[in-house]
Image (cartoon, rainbow over all chains, first blue to last red; front, side, top):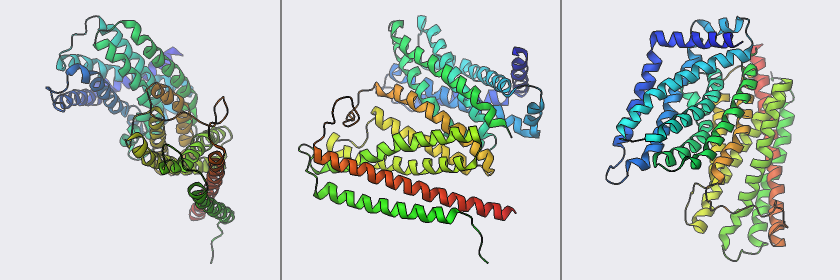
Amino acid sequence: MLRLVLAIAGKDLRVELRTRTSLLSAAVFAALMLIVFNFARDPTAVATIDLAPSVLWVTVAFASVVAMNRAFTVERDNNAFDGLLLAPVSRELIYLGKYLANLLFVLLVEAITLPLFILFFNLDLGGAFPPLVLTLLLATTGFVAVGTLFGAIVARTRFAELMLPVLLLPFMVPPLIYAVKVTVPLLSGRPLSEVIPGLTFLLVYDVVFLTLALLLFPAVLDE
Amino acid sequence: MTLNLGPGHAVIRRGLVLTVLGLVGVAALMVLALAYTPVEARQGLAQKIFYVHVPSATVLLWIAMPLTGLLSMLYLWLRDLRFDRLAAATAEVGTVFCLAVLATGPIWARPIWGTWWTWDGRLTLTLFLFFLLLGYHTLRASLRDPVERGRFSAVISIMGVVLVPFIHLSVYLWRGLHPQPIILKPSAPSLPPEMLRTLLVGFGVFILLFAGMVTLRYGIQLVRDAREAADAA
């Protein structure tokens, strides 16, 4: 079972790493957003530390949407998805494979964004780095679960690239609110106990929406 | 030659009657609220919008949205297109009610709170609901095949129903200006009897209007589907 999931995810990542177009454009998009944000504030009026958490999460949100658009639109070319559906694999495993590939892909984009963010905003994270990575991981796990389900839906519509953010952004808001609530105390060096409720909320969101997306995915596919 | 448009026309007629009754009811509610209900001591006439705002919000949150979620689940379970049409109708009329809530809220808030908008938990939740509904309609509009449209919009709607408590949880902790419930609360309703009477009339009128508009919308969809089927044949 795990082997099948890994095979589907591996296929997606291989396709992506051979062309690198989506990864590169998502990473460049994230870097450009950070730069635009840097010039969109008045450095004498707003301190970096006040703006940093929201900049990080807005950048992560939009770069993730750009990255997630790829998952099912690539399957549309040459009717590749029909081939996947014909494979003797249950729909749930197809979902998990696509989800895993999406998750790794978005995490890769975040792995490029985070150092740039620290660099551009001159942050000294110190001991806050591991919990910040954990926050990114928990928030991403949840909204990619929703994004993978919606990706399969919007791939069947016209204007799929525009439809995904319209449907997905409301679902990204609760994890983003809590991620920002966690990031603010982390960046200002307050004790870790303050971030536990926020991280718990993110974990609950992950469990609920991953389960729900897994249950609903077969309904998206059946003809 | 006249097209046979099926049972849609009868449903539309019924929906029209109910909607007109509902609209007459809204007019009567205005008269009742303005002429026969005492003016609130502190807020003055601004409080009158309460009799529109609260019933619209109640119908939206406790009737329209649960119905859309329930009908979507029924559609995924039974795969009967009637459930999908009805879910679409409740969502569409729900959007109208949502807009009514979002429009009357700021008009009331401006004189009383001194601001048109505040990021209070309930306001934020209603705004997100509105955007969820817009997404739902955008998706529906971009799909042609009714069966596929039914499945996809049911999936989105069920996801939305689960999302609402999460949005509620993530925003309600913020300190808000919005008053707490005054009728559905553990202790007795804290509203003078005349105001309570007008509010209850408001609930009745808006439920009637909702039922009328949903019936009308459902009938229109029946006619539209019959026409599409006739074109395809």
